[in-house]
Each structure stands twice: as structure tokens, then as C-alpha cells.
Amino acid sequence: MIITKEWFTIEEAAEYLCVSRRTIYKLTKEGRLPAFRIGRERHRRFRKEDLDKAPQALKDAKDIDSILALSASADPVLAELWDNEKDAAYDRI
Image 1 (cartoon, rainbow, N blue to C red):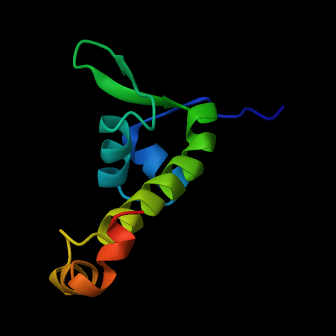
Image 2 (image 1 turned 135 degrees about the horizontal axis):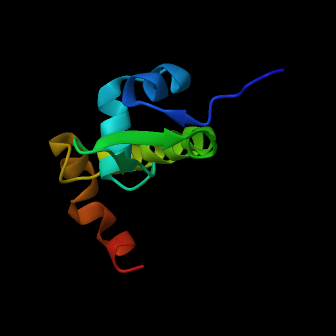
């Protein structure tokens, strides 16, 4: 008889996804990974089916971070390149 684990603690979820506990907390806070609070001390538990969907949430988060990193406000060199008179025509498009 094979028993598959359905509920995971934070540590187990992090190990299952091969990420840090901090990443699990971040995904939970951002709403990308549902967590269930149980017991008097309100410990978090994660369902296996939600953890199996988490790699896509991780990928989406990395894509968003890479897009945000490429902004003129985040990088002064890019600001100088993008905010100049030569490319003003592109700003009107």
C-alpha cells in the first residue's frame, strides 16, 4: 500500500519544492501559494496539489522580477539611454 502525503509543513513544502522557507513565506504572502492555518498556534499547512502548481508561480515571479529590473527608474544607465531626445519619437507611439 502506497501512502502519499497530502499536507505539508513549511519545512516540508520548502524541501518538496527545493526552495528556501523564505520563498514559501513570500509565495504565501503574495497569494501565489495557498496556505491553511491550523491549530491554536495557527501553523501553516500546504496541500500537495497546490505545491504541485507552485513551480509555475515561481516562474511567473521570476519573469515579473526580470521585467521590473529592466526599468529606467531601477537603473540609471537605462534611464540615460531611454530618456533622451533622440528617442523622443518612440515615446509618442
